[in-house]
Image (tube, rainbow, N blue to C red; front, side):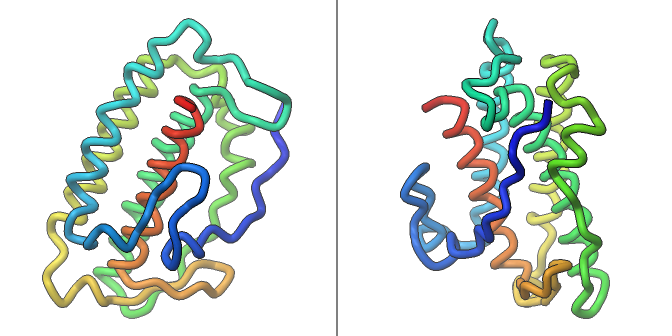
Length: 172
């Protein structure tokens, strides 16, 4: 059964700290995101080894496995988006419905060990993308399907909140 979709516009995390997970984009430079992402990804396999990995805390909250599969897929989506921003002028990213993906891909039925490895691999691929951004490349623009503007720098900091926040979700 799907959870209630999250319809918040989380771009405010670029302007102020998240009161839930404590993420503060102002404390990081975009050039630090790759290393932060690698460190965050390494924490997920231990979460996925828990015996309650498939248990939802309530009807409106994903299980740890569902969050991990989501983080894996977010890394994959953002690898594509950053690639578009680097290779095209002001691209409009294709829409991605995270909730439809969770249902269609049956996140909570996937193998936790496989998801853990795929999450680390997807995070590593995105981190390598960030590693290759040239100094002036951080200001290349792109747009989300709702029209929200980003630069490579701002999207990296925005993205990292997702990874940090969902780890907080499963460890609070």
